[in-house]
Image 1 (spheres, rainbow, N blue to C red):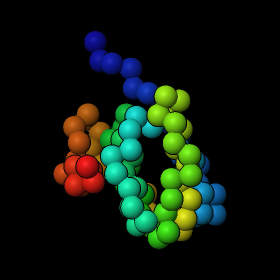
Image 2: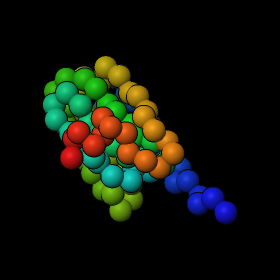
Image 3: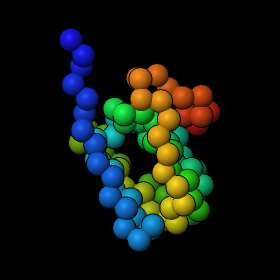
Image 4: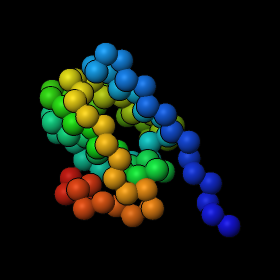
Amino acid sequence: MEPVKKKHTLMLDSRKNLAITGAEDVNGFNEETVSVRTSDGTLIIKGSNLHIDKLNLETGDVSVDGKINSLQYFGGDGRQSKLSRLFK
């Protein structure tokens, strides 16, 4: 039997504020990239002046602010991508 995936959502407001629910871990971050592990793979957030405003892994809530230029998923089969391992 396959394990139940944790549901997650993304809400982006004016490319400045990103709210994520259902996050499992934050693999790494800096002012240009934030790497968040979700049940559907690793989400890579790219932009400038990025800051993690809220982080609560017990509830799975993560908020990122700054100028967000792209959101991209890598993986999804439960394994870490090579890119996300770079941020550890």
